[in-house]
Image 1 (tube, helix red, strand yellow):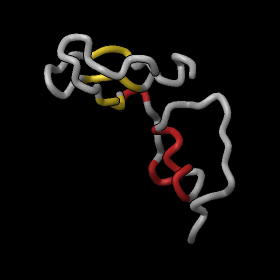
Image 2 (image 1 turned 90 degrees about the horizontal axis):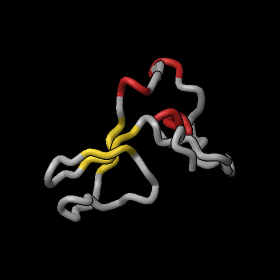
Image 3 (image 1 turned 60 degrees about the vertical axis):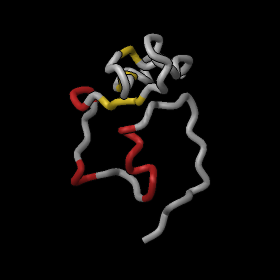
Length: 79
């Protein structure tokens, strides 16, 4: 996963508040060892909630890290 894919997130420690740029290889706080939370940076996401492009779980794809390849079987296309 590219660094661009994670650019809309920071990782934050819920125990001590330490923040670090999102990195798929960093999961624990280097200060206290607590698991880090992924925090969405709202200023880096542009979503028009009135016109989400898909149905099901994929309507939220703009909030997720951008994968190199998307594989779907049409799941969650319920009305």
